[in-house]
Image 1 (tube, rainbow, N blue to C red):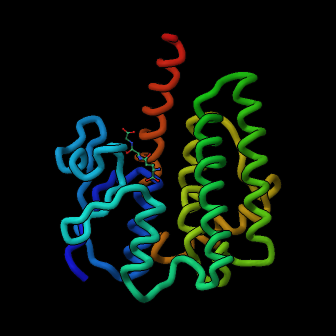
Image 2 (spheres, rainbow, N blue to C red):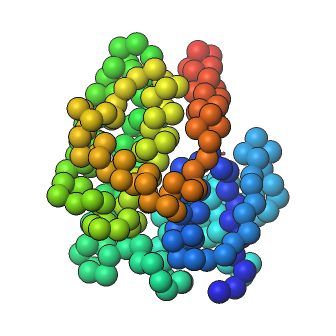
Length: 223
Ligand SMILES: N[C@@H](CCC(=O)N[C@@H](CS)C(=O)NCC(=O)O)C(=O)O
């Protein structure tokens, strides 16, 4: 198995993806919490390009970027499969994961940091991306089928983090009426023991986003 270290911050959705995947695979790891306001020499050395968490270090070899790490974990350890076996289904899981990250997560974050009319437009646009995504879970318990897989893990920010973003941004996107299938998926996902037992406290996520939002608003005000 080798020695596995994870450089992460507990409130970060990309970092949680890696913890969930390691736990699903039954891989033991050393968790190292990073202070993003004062990044460690180890993080800067392991991810000199982006200087971001998560970073997985397997036998002294660092890997950055959560999607790349998830695939590395899936290829390196047997047991619970993250990506489907069929090449086309694998390609689809990667495609929708990219969309979920680049359009939905970023879109909701932009809506959270916007105000007034700009926020209304950003909420509408983020909602559209979530509506596209929820069609992918129609007729299934999880995006991965009967069990959670790669796309479920990537979208795992929705149950807790989306709720925190809604609270911080004073907006509402996900409920049983606006997105019934995604709402149901979210309830199912949060019940999976590995997920339920490995979530950060909501207050911590709220203060993480509050800090980020205040920072973005101060940048916009000083333009
Ligand atoms: N695309 C990256 C995003 C990673 C990311 O944005 N990490 C944030 C924490 S959620 C970070 O390290 N931020 C520090 C910084 O931007 O300086 C991934 O999926 O791993």
